[in-house]
Image 1 (cartoon, one colour):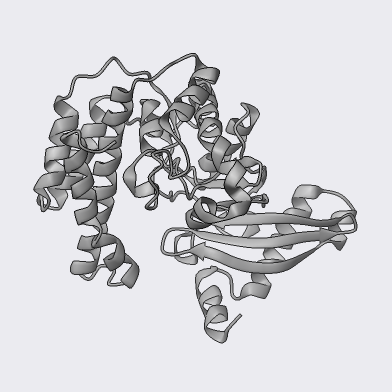
Image 2 (cartoon, rainbow, N blue to C red):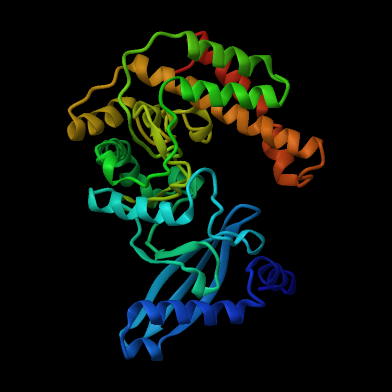
Length: 353
């Protein structure tokens, strides 16, 4: 680790330094274990994996007499460590609850080890198991060791989405956002209006979605960001579903269309996440739910996914242009607005699958 890396960690942890953060983690886990052996355990290999203004992800081992337990800390940055704040529309406590509930219903997820409390002095967040696997899309799509996994992954994704959508609503966090029906379109229009409708193509896409007749949708839990990049995969296939912060109530087919969006294929001709075919995804879904979505259903939500990505790009572009966040990352994402607009036009014209 370089000196600048250490400085970045010190600035963003919300505790005085990485050593103090390790001490806080040790105290939190020792209290959760409530065993004599826990007092002799230690934190080793504490390392920040990713994160920026909205989220931090840290990797470490909880090492005791029985061996090392690989764990992940997911938390808000130091400047936003109050327990009332949220990322997107879920608090991290609610996100941890959602992951635990999903695991009980057969969804492959990490095990939530501990939800942080104020006395832990680490801010809002939770600690979960660090599962073995790969999440980087370009490795999953190219490496030979994942060839067999790619062949079964679309079916597994269909099954997993089926299990997510069957979770009883009464078990979900009370504050889960409702994006069902016209609420979905109201939110999108408000965002476009905020940016003075700088993209007529995005407005066209929203109008198309709003005017297109659909069958009466169900209202279920929707993951909201189920895609290549948020799936942990090993040589056998799907290991865990990650990044639940965009979960909401809505039409379940939204998740099926989202993973088929062009932006999440990463240049591959395969329509499902760049690794699979529609037929396998839908067969996996039907095997769990008994529901057979049509390709028209999938196409509708692919249009929505292209619109959603376009609005993300528009927001990043405006943050860069107005100086709110002049980082290279914002500029790089913002410049992709034209790609999303092209995807939208092709989908609306029926020229892209």
